[in-house]
Structures are given as structure tokens and as C-alpha cells.
Image: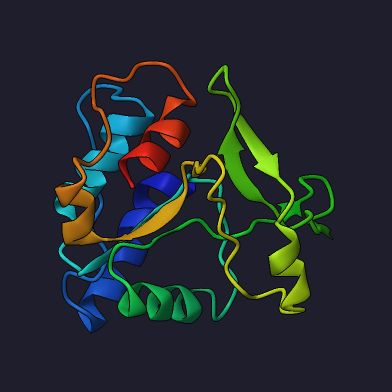
Length: 170
């Protein structure tokens, strides 16, 4: 129900104050995850683009640290940490901090941060996974850099491969 008239009203209201701030991309047929993300990137005009699953909720102040890190190095692709919001009572369950990597079968895995990261004693510091870098499908990237590395493979039909593909491209 919220995705029809209510969404249209909300987008119009926001765009009255900030013209073109929100763009809604609709496909005439089901395109899947990768092609949908790439079509969203194509519609975007901002210098930094965030591509997330529809079920992700954002907290206040999430964007500033991410944008600062990309400003420091435009070749950074940021995958933020996530917590779980329980569907039955909306209680927040904190997930352990981790990096993403992959194994020899190319399955995406959550990796414990390296000892050097824990020694920083700063849970807001970026976690780099240099052993086998992967990124979950939700990420923030410099718009032009994403094009330079070839976006995502729009021929990919099976869920999950974009994690490894993006890590290798970066």
C-alpha cells in the first residue's frame, strides 16, 4: 500500500522542496538485483551513489562518516555494518562487527576483523579485509569510479556473485 499513492505523494512533497532529490526508477518487467542496481546508478546524478536493498533502514548520521572516507579516497567502496531489526517487535539486535571475504568456493563469508583493527580500540574505524575482499551487495561508491571499474555484470542471474565480483573489481 505504501508503494503506490503514498510513495508518490511523499516523493512529490520532497521534490517540491528539493527538486530532483528523489528519483523513482520503475521497470516494465522484473529485472533482478544487479540490473536494478545498475539502472538506479544510471538514474543517479550525485557524485556519490548508495545502492542498498529495499529492506535496509538508516539511522541519523550514517552518511557523514561514509562520505568523508570517500572524499579522502574516491576509490574506496564502503559497505557499512548492519544490525538486525526484529520483525515482530522492532527490537534492534546488534550484529558483531565483521568484514566480508570469500572462500575457495567463492562463497561470501563474514570475517573477524584483524588484530590490528581491534588494537585501534575504535569501533567506528573502517575494517579492511585484504585477505579476500568481498562486499555485501549494499554499498556506497564514487559514481565515476564505479563506472571506471565496470559497474556490475548485468548478465549475472544468480544471487550472491556480486559480492565477490565487486571485491575483485575494486
